[in-house]
Length: 420
Length: 173
Image 1 (tube, rainbow over the protein chains, first blue to last red):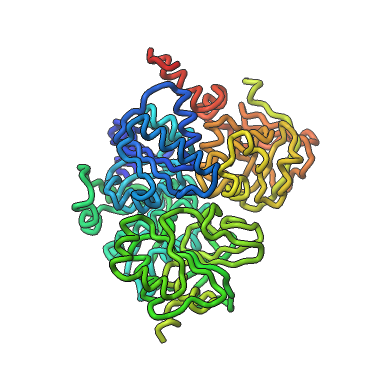
Image 2: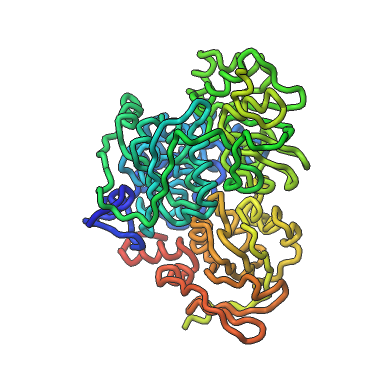
């Protein structure tokens, strides 16, 4: 029976010849991921089961959300995570100084590879579909149970085919691709489904673009988003992973419930306006919107190419006097590379602050919370009401180049304005 | 017919707006101990004092994509511990629904938009998916699958996993 990539991966992990959409299966997991805010409840549930961890090499624990500890309560949660990692001798626990934002760190460290089944107690776990894995977010109880059993239940998702052609014009990035898609289908347009990216245009998307696109699959409700395994994937993994993996590909006659065509050549820089990621508008169609803060970073756009896009725009310029600009490299490796390439110097000279890796501001944790009435342009993934602070603040989602240009002008604008 | 799966309660009607997890439990409340989460239930919503007003057994009625966004299990835990007995929505975000079932918070697919208002008393039968309105009319919701009902009957996923491990002759405590 013809299967999608997701169906093939789930079938192999369930020990079945084939699976079909809607089927309930029990699948083995290759990676179980947790962070400092979702793991403590997971550990409490794990302890109720009364078993050892199923495999200390397959559990990945990353303190990244409120880390370095923002207050006493977050310090306590981080301590719970740290002590669990040490007690169970977890191989991949990343302490402050080595940690990064989990979805930047795991691909970078080669801990996620094609064909795997990955669950993480974080909704953006779907990021790893970029390397051709089935990866999906779960809650703490699922994480706790899987740490004991090494498997979990899934309903096999039906699939939407996203057929990509063309190549991106200048100043268009992966963020514009996924925001455009979410704008087309809405925040529940792929609810419970798999987004399967196909087509010749994929060869023109870098791994950074793919990671950004897969990262936000959840923002249209998808269970996972998955890219085919190609030369870009192999080149990215070479020298990065010690894991062996097998290439999986969709059957040519796999069944999709819907096909969506995106021609990259038609895209333009876009913004998702408050308060849903589906409120997508072209930057050039916006009225003048003055802003108070810019954040460049996060699991969506915290990689070196993202910082490069911002640095190119900000080089030799100054952040608008009424704007606070916060740059957050996604990992220590990204931070170091940005330092060596001079991006950090560019940001600081422009009047931005540069933070250690953290999810902090994206979820209204710390390191850039908004007051009532304030507006922020951010490269993060959600603009729900109150997401980054006061319920009467506003979040505008963009790619790094638009965010950087907006930081300079103090209003939402496209990067082409900077290079006139 | 499992009587534990029949809920009668007072409605909190949220209409058609998407209720995301940042409204159900704002990020700033994520460091709370489990016991304090209830104080922040729906603190980011249009009913910010929900936690003070909710009564045990109350039923939330909402529109599409309830629980969109974060995987934070603290969101359904906050609702459950504040006293919410069940959530009825046109649709649920996948991770939220899975979390709710895992912790034993009953969630049912049904479209009650325009059929009820806050303060109405309704009965929700998770055995059949049927909802009885104040005037006695009934609305058919989606009957939960056997696996969902078995997790809810066990009291959540962890009790169910423990049962399974014990059946295998394991050494679960």
